[in-house]
Amino acid sequence: DVSQETLDRSTVGSLRPGSFVNLERAVTPSTRLGGHIVQGHVDGTGKFLSASESGGFWTLRVSYPKEIGQYLVFKGSIAVEGISLTIAKLTDEYFEIAIIPKTWEMTNLSGLKNGSDVNLEVDIIAKYVERILLYRDGPDRSGNITIEKLRDLGFA
Image (cartoon, helix red, strand yellow):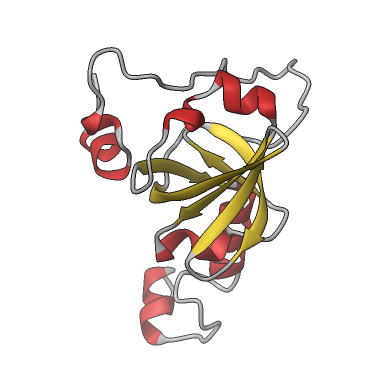
């Protein structure tokens, strides 16, 4: 079963029987963390723009929707098609990721065509930091005391 939320935010709706997808086991509290924290919650889709190879290593260029741009940083993490990767280059329209030969061979990245939609997941820690900063002074974000705010808190 697939929820409407998943269909709206991911490429799942375009999959056909036999499609190659990347699956990883969930992290447990006793699992050693050796990389980025990926939850498997797609934040949006981007477009696969290009791939270039040099000595068996690949550089992939992917566009991203503006609403996730604030969470992307150079050398930060991004999951593309469920694969946790490091941003090697970042612009306002796209990012590039460096792919080692083993990842290229063992994932569906090697089968992507220019213009293909790809699932993107940003760093969960970045989203939590944003939320904390946004609401540190209360939901109105201004820090001002208003009659409405006092009423909402039960003081007026």
